[in-house]
Each structure stands twice: as C-alpha cells, then as structure tokens.
Length: 470
Image 1 (cartoon, rainbow, N blue to C red):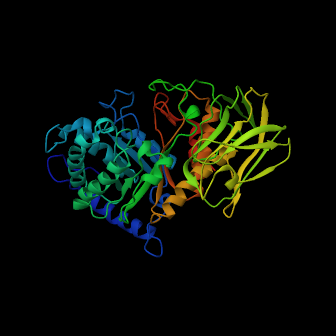
Image 2: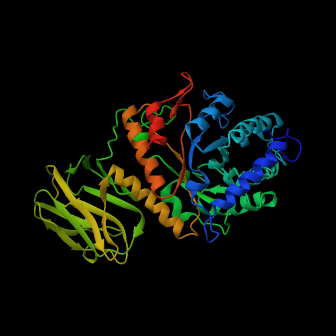
Image 3: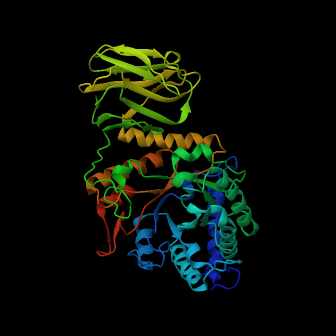
C-alpha cells in the first residue's frame, strides 16, 4: 500500500482501508479486559531500528540506503515492528509554517508503505533534531509546526503507525522544558490523531535514571520508552564518532560484578577490579569506594558489609562530609545501623572509605547491601542481574504512573566489541525486556551495530538468534 503524494492531507489508497479495519480488530483484541492499554510486547513485540538512513543529513551519507528487500527480510525473520528514525528537522523550512520538503516526505511515505505492505508496525520517530540540545526554547515552535504537518499527513494511516515525539532529549533540553513540550506536542498530534499511539521517553538520552523527572500526561494512548546501552564502556567501545570512545577489548560475560542499576561508581583514588568478586585497592590515605544513588532509596535501616581482611574504614550513607569510623573483621559480616552513618529516612549514597592516612593493600569487598522492611538490596550484582534490576526500575515507574506500555526503543552493542560478547549481552537484554512484558527494538538493522549484513545481504546468524531465538 502507498500513501498519496505530499501536498494534500494524507489519505490512503484503496488497500489501506482494509488494513485499517484489520488493525482496528487487532487493536481491539489487544486491549486488556478492563479496557486498559495492552502491554507493549503485544503492541509492538519484537522490533528493529532502521538506523543511519533517514535520520542522516541525507539518506546514504552514513552508509545505508533503505530498500524494500530489507523490509522483506525483517518481516520474514519474524520481527513485528520497525522503528523509523527520521530527521524531519533537516528537511523543513526555517521559517513558519516550517514546510516539509515534499520530495523527502514522499521518500518517507515510500518506506512507510513498504513496512505496512509487509504487515509490520512502524514507529515514525523524530530523530536528530540536534539544535534542540543547544537552544531548545528557540526551536519549540518549529518542532510543533513539523509535528502538525506529520500528524496531519498520516492521520488516516492504520493503527499500526505510531509516532515518537522526539528521540533522546538531552543537554539543554531538561525536565521542565521537556515536560511542557510533551504536553504541547501531544496537543498538536491529538488535533488530527485523537487515538494514535504516541511514544514518549525521559530526558538524559531517554535514560532510565531520568524517569523521576518525567511528568506522565493523562493520555491512555501513550507508550513509555527508554533506551539501554549499559555498560557504555562495553556497548560503545571503539565508537569512532564519540569524542572519547571507550577502548576496545572490554568483554561482557554476564557474571562479573557491577554496581546495581540506579547506583553509579563515583570512587576516588581507589582501584576497583570488578571480577567475580570486587577487589578494592585504596591508593592513598582517605580515598574511597563511592556508590551514588540516582534517587535516594527508602525502606532500609541497616548497611551490611563484609571485607576479606581486617580493615579500618569510614562509612558514609548521607549527603555531606563526615564518615562513621568502623573496624571490620575479615570474613565476618558487619551490620551497621543506617542511623549510625548518617542516613535519616533515605539513603542517597554509600561510601566505604579508607579510614587511615596511608595507602592500603588490596582487599575483597565480599558483601555490601541494604537491609530493612523492603528486604535485602545488594548494591553489587552480576552484570546479568544489573540489567534485570534496571528494567525493574522502569516497570515500577510505569506502575506508579498509570501503567503505560513500556518499549525499549534502542539497545545494541557496537561492532568493535567481540561478536560472542555482543550476542550474550543482546540476548540478556532482550530476554529481560520480554520477561517484564516490554516491547523492544534493537539498534540497529544494517550499520555499525547491525544485526544484518547488507554486503552479504544476509542476517548475522548469531545476532538474529539472540534477538528472536529461544
């Protein structure tokens, strides 16, 4: 099926009417018994991003020009959704009414038509509006003008077409402005598409840690999206477009220890060896191992820690300076009331600090966890468990905000990583998403993260199995 040429309000050719009726039946059957939104694994299922194509300054500049055979390969493999990043801002006039280039719009129509022809869902994603990162207030009106045109153009498309207001808001586009823009953008879309599914995510590059700053609108046709690329040192190793790419050679086994999701390692003057156990070396006096919570946690009253040998430490679990002196006995668990290390009601951070003025020989931090009414919260977990814990944060946030469908809109590991490690990581992320009822879209189809090899015109078998295999 094909959309009409630009310049008129988007109408759909004859076959689209049948597709719309079919999609309506599918959408109705996907509703939960109480009429609430379906889980995103029903809504979008398994997806893939057509990255590095229509969101490039010009299609082909980043090495990928889309063709219908790629859509056929995606459908035949068993995917259900294509996320289509589009750089609308690069193809719209600078002055009101910010008219979209009709040639570019026709090209997007062509690709959307291919996707619909193969009975796939498509998410039309406004991508790489780079000026928004530097001066968002100056571009809000233009962004709204672009969305008004896109929404009107696709208003008669079937329910299998969804919109994503903006990919990865970041930098100067902070929570307050983004929350206002979401309301404004939805209002524009709803003028012509009152029941269209719309995808919305938090700031900070759609980071899970930025969810607390997102104000969820009262709209029952919204999908929550986040992106997942942790650990960045693994997924982006050797990424040449980055100003400081992580070095190549980082493995990912799933079994090594790492800080729990929502806790960042801000240590200073301290060597950390995250293996099957965490070995710490204080390289100077008063240096420390420091875990900072993205949001203070509550429901705990005790810090439980254990070291491999006797240690003189300072323990801090509050904001501000000053630690509580403790003496550990090697191999024996120490239960420290949080009130004794400064926590009053919540825990914003945990610091295990050298309690002497001298460097110390290595020791193993055998246990570090919070205990209380909410159970036991290990602050050091396996790499695999860290992914599950991260997605638990997303699930819990969604449950507290109207329970919208959740969509992991991007996850992927760059080609500089060893293929076996990429496959292991990809499978764990996909399975963790599906276990929680999340839809997902791998980043991406056929470029540096690609699951498909355009030169060989074939899927990379191990990557495809990680995405769609048992």
